[in-house]
Image (cartoon, one colour):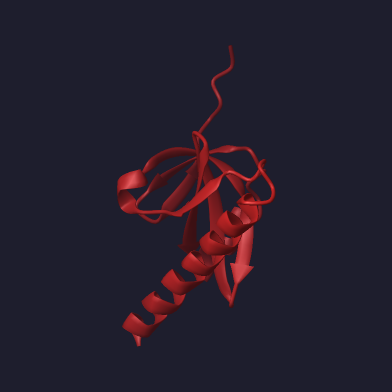
Length: 103
């Protein structure tokens, strides 16, 4: 069911966030991780793609925090083309690259 799928995706996000934050206790260079929520929206630095229990997760850094968001499998192909440290923008579930302004 859709509800079961939503719970599975949320659990994958929480599992990853908890694991990274546990490692922060020993490795100071790991930034704080939080589940992404729609209020977080805006521009982020893309930090990578992870898979947890068959769910694709993207890592989006904003300031000193890395937000973890599940994405539909249909977006994985596009995400694999996004360079790490690229600036990305989130509008709802849509991810797009933001063009770097040339000085």
